[in-house]
Length: 477
Image (cartoon, rainbow, N blue to C red):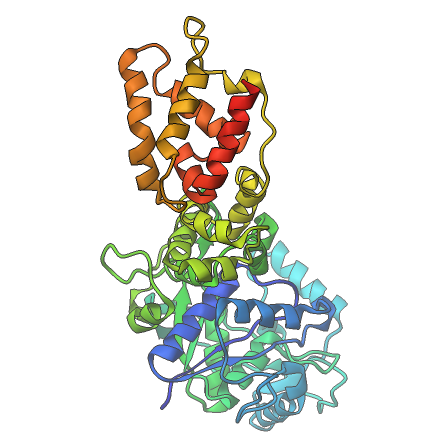
């Protein structure tokens, strides 16, 4: 049978890293085995549904590059992929269970059920609805909740790809609700039916579902269906590594990372390694490399800490992998002078971790590239020793002489070879040192106290504009 995986979110808000990783693992496994990845929207909890959430989650997956083979927008052989549009199918399966004697209408009011629950608490025993199951059942007319009648009370044991053999006892089985009083199916019922009908072969989900798995297995047994293969994913922990990361604890919307200037390739790389270890020391993977290397058996059991510093590192590495042209285009970078912007890309690759930082750098310390600086004499001579009052003027004159007649466009290393001997000569004299040469050059070129070094500035500005700015500084002196 062809591998078929699914991601089935509820449209109750944005996608955070936990949900995105679940989708990623399901997608990677399907792609690795030439199978299909299904995006199903489970929207039967209408009270919690958030307007616009479906579009938002689809946009999130598209940004990450997790493209589905079947869903509400592209269709597929097992339509519809919107759970609320599958109610007729859920009703059909419910009636199959009724006919087989495995479902019955709930005869009690919510208040009566509360009395049963409180009594169990007082007697210090778990509340089980099946202890109050009536002997005779009415015919279900759809106005009351429909409950599952557990066929056999037994200990269930099942194999999980990640956690190995798992089991749960009789206390995990109860007569849970299949169809609510409003006609919508519960999650416990609907996702099982949808997985059966969509021929899902592998289900990846969090550890919180382990305790409910016996219910699902009992339902599969009652329907005479074979359950899919389960792969339980470890939790993603907060930065302290002690608590599961959640929306309540500050987990961000995946699209916030896009807006901050992260690359989707970096986010995919980072998420893949949050709980999966391909072996070896390699950390930076392309999308195709992840597909080729991914194996469910290498998913770890312990929780993975969400390390923002590691994400920044990975993003910088993926940014550096881009060509200079792609760096500008993917980052949405603009500047008044395109030629200078292109020359500045190596500096941006070296010093920034996100495109948000790159834009801030262009607008901040690199703004001097687009406009001639306004200089203050006191800052220009800030490194000049009192006993050598003409050192700054002499240093700038020496730099201008060194730059005279050389090519307009030079590499950073070529500029350094020209100017560094002047700084080294002053360092040898001991009065003022290299700073007496490099500081006025930096300030004259940038007008800033903090800026790239003068070798980088000359390389980006070009010798003509650099000498013009240096002459302006000399005029002030």
